[in-house]
Amino acid sequence: MAEILRHPRPGFTWDWWAVDAEGFLVQFSHGPAPVPLLAHLDRVDAAAAWAEENHPMWFGDDPLPPLHAFDCGGESPTYTRRGVPDSPLRLSDAPAAIADVAALVHLKRAVGDAWTIRLDEGWV
Image (cartoon, rainbow, N blue to C red):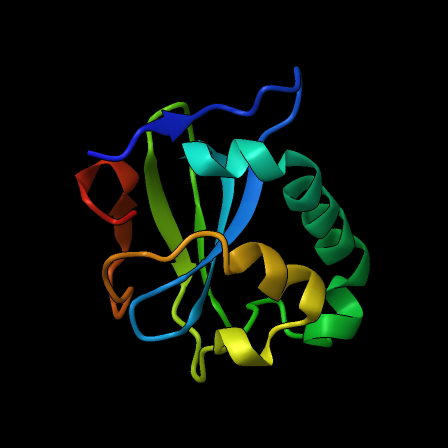
């Protein structure tokens, strides 16, 4: 079982990226993250700020980004998919600010059509 980390800064939640077993970019928002990201806290938070600021340029007007995106509704390490992209983004096609952070976490499985990911059940 992977150890899961709450964001250490009061009032902050994790927004982080990973790469799944098939090389696709996966975004996780508002929940816990794998412990190894703590060593890269500034990079992860900077990438999240970059993504928020550059969202329109990065994704255009599409409300559903072309990547596997999951949200967490609470303290548990359970994430629910926001939607299934028609053509998911590969890590190699991601902007550098995001790709550098996503490369820090490799999921042990491919996301595929999964609608729920529980990090403590062997995803990381």
